[in-house]
Length: 252
Image (tube, rainbow, N blue to C red; front, side):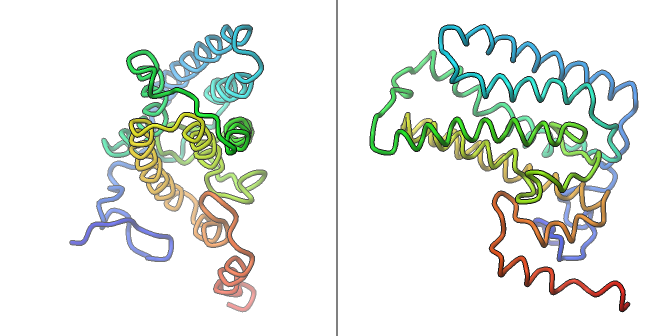
């Protein structure tokens, strides 16, 4: 049986491809959900506190990171209970790798090989700084807009299609990509570029898995995916063409 990503247009059962076995899509027990919410809040609250403690020395440049970490921490306390979750090894590797691999590489690399992170000032440096700061602020905004549906592992809590999700299905990841690309332009090195390549692969797989569980829980996600791009707005012509392919419900 063939293996590959299931798109919204394929009409295939998700379990047929092994991408997301239906048996793995379950309702999380309430007590376990409360435990994971508490752990998530504690981790990101401590992280935000550490960032805040560094701000007097580093300055306002860390303010966007602090806001993002604070938004994530609060989201763990107020988010909805999941309608469905994906509990596979692949999903967890992609989710936690996408969330923490690049950050861990930066923390470890800066201590063991500081020469990898020597800033290179070029005509593109101002653009890179704007990308980094703008990407971090945009990520914080997108996370806060997603707060009731936020999750690390692929889960369906509620379908959010407003705010930044009007223009992209994964605006949080749009901000991440802008942030890390800005950092790479500022501190270009082969090890950092390789690490970001691994991180990007995890993020792309994470998007596939998240969309699979959302399609299963919310049938209207199929139409949303046709209208809205993954990381950036679709071109107007393509968006109109996708909309035109939808059947006229009133005439059916």
